[in-house]
Length: 481
Image (cartoon, rainbow, N blue to C red; front, side, top):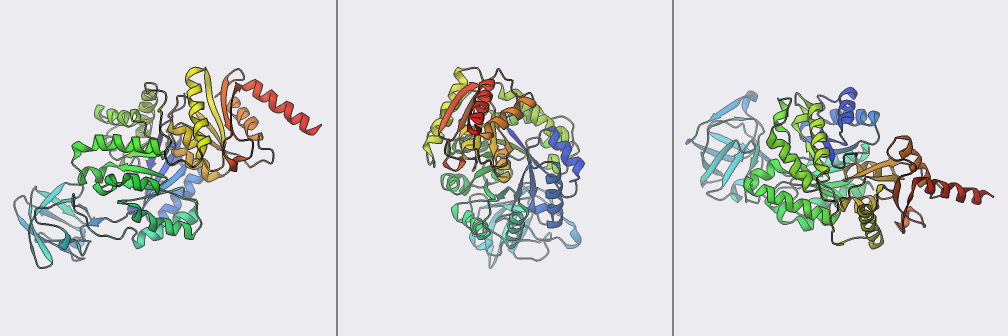
């Protein structure tokens, strides 16, 4: 069986050769992620060009930096040793950070941070507890010793700092992504719909098809998930910052609930961050990491993501292969169907046919589900039920085929739009038969529409491959008589 859970691999512009990308693709990568925080536009251009030269089936996702707080530079790009128990000043601004004073990028932050709050620096490696405010600065005490370097992340759990949702750099990268034909924008630190509307305005201005993935990285994002889902194509559970903003012991239940909401909403959901962290330096995963991957798959996430493991790690291809093996094994042990409620759907006929198709696969020896789709909606609906059988989709837009690379259990192929709509089925059956994915004797489910792809699904048919092929030939012969 083909692996249904999709794999996202982060690619750095420092290591993005065609040979490297092809190796990850062969190992099982479905989506390439570019982190704009660590890539130049020239480097991102090279990544996209090289990915497209390997395969037009690989989707590309780019992160924005979003509204984040960071420490300032340290003179001569050095480091500052902070010692537990020592007091230190914190100010908003751009001066050099020193042992006596740390500057943070949010100039208005000090007025919003109360006494007693914690500043967690560099993914929580350094904690500073705020003792008091003096003028426009704060006085804090270092809770644990550590080395501070330039431009490190700053998290202030349960404190809202008013920051612009889309920075000037974000705008530059969003416009670049639209012009370059990137498939997804993963917007960082989404707190609510207002953060997304700024991105949406840019997309609409350029009349782009690019889809928005909301990165859930703080308490506000978790609390406002229902609102966020209404304005997003999908979400990414970014457990790095989320695990700093929220107590770590709460993350497993939050992850499970977010995945469940996305499945019910028919929105792709990605589980990300440190899934195979040890494989940055080691050739084999820990048992805990394997269980972490398995947990996300049991919860039915659409995709699992690699970050430093493939961007800069010593064993990038091995990391993808490890994810692939774990996913294949766990998928054999999952329940066959999720009976979701039909909330906020745009076409109830498509939803009902999708559920019936997946249920039919439980009761009959069906090998595959075959669909055609213009917008990808039918594929996403079928995917949401998390059936056992693969969904082979014919797409009439290349970008839709790549979008479905992020959907559980969907395997999409682009096909030129045909004047005779049912050509899609004959061509797809022939492709699948030639690639040994089906045989003439196999039973398949077809979900399609008699009124054109724009009108959505209108029928469900269960038949053997050979009978479908003979039916098509017969109809086509009569049409030309």
